[in-house]
Length: 391
Image 1: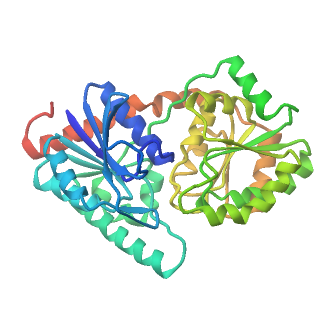
Image 2: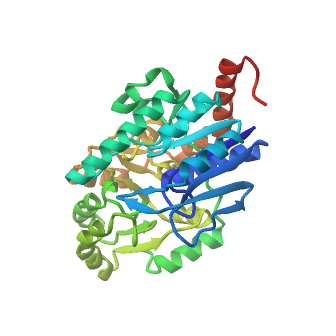
Image 3: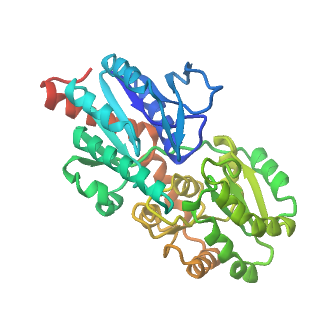
C-alpha cells in the first residue's frame, strides 16, 4: 500500500506530534508499505525532497508565517499530485490544509484517516481568535470529508467538543511510544554530566518549553517540595530556546529559573536522542506533566517514564490522566493548582508506586501495534468504498 501522510511540521522539528508521526510512518514502512511524508519546508535550508529511514519526505516551500501556521501557495498543486499517486491518505490535525486534502481523498475514493492530536487553543487576542476560527472551520470540514478519525483515548474523545461532533467516525487507537534500553555506562555518564553532586530526588519535565506545558506551575510548586527535600533538583529535557511563538513565555520564567540554576537546583539538558532519553529516565525519580489545556491530550513522555519504572504526576486533563489511571504509577493533579501539584509530588516521592506495571505498556503502545491498527482501519474503509481488500 502506498500511504501519503501529511502534517505541517515534521522532523527535524521536535514535538509530541512530529515524534508520533515519525514513529507511525516508520512502523508502517516496516510492515511493507511505501510511505511519503508531505510537509512544510519550515526552515529554508531543509531539502525539498529526501529519503530517510525508509521514508520519502517531500517539503513544500513556505512563503509566509501566520502565528504558528505557514502559508504555502504551491501546496494544493503538489498535494493533488501526491494523492493521485497513493492508495491511502493519513492526515494529522490540527492542520490548516487538511480540509482540501480530505475532500480530495473522498472525491478520488482514497481511504482517508485523520489522527486528531489535540484541540486548538491559542493565546487571547483578536488576531489569534481570527486565526483559531479559520483553523477550526478547516478542521471541521476535514472531519466532515474524511472517512475515519483516530483518537488516542476514549477519555479525550468523549470530552473534546470537536470530536463529539463526529463520534460515529472516531476509532480509538493508542499512540506509538517506544524507547530503547539504556546501558549502565550511559546512565552513569549522564548523571556525571548533569548531577555530579548526586542530588536527590531528581524531578523532571520532558517537553518543549511552551505556555500550555505549565512550567510556571512547577516553579510555583517547588518551594514546598524543596522544604521537604532540600537536596532536590529539576531536570528539564527538551527544547527551551527559540521555541516558535514562545519567546515571551520563556522570558517571563527566566528570572526564577536562573535563580534556581545559580543554586544548582535546575538543569536544562536540551533536546536528547532516544538513547539519551532512556538514560534520562533511569536517572530521575519523578516525571511531572503539569499541562494546562487541551492542546495536551496524552503526554507520550508519561508512558516512556513508566516503561522505565518511574512514576508520574500529571494534570487532570482528558487523555493526559489516562496513563496514570491505567497503571496506578503516580497521581493525577488538578489543572492549574500549584499547591495541589506540590502535595501530589511529595506524596509520590514519599511512597513510590509499584513499577512492574510499566513493562505491560511496551506491547500496548508499540509502534508496530499502532501501525497494524491503522492498517486495519484503512482496509475497512477500502472494503466499504470498493468492496475489495486493500493490497
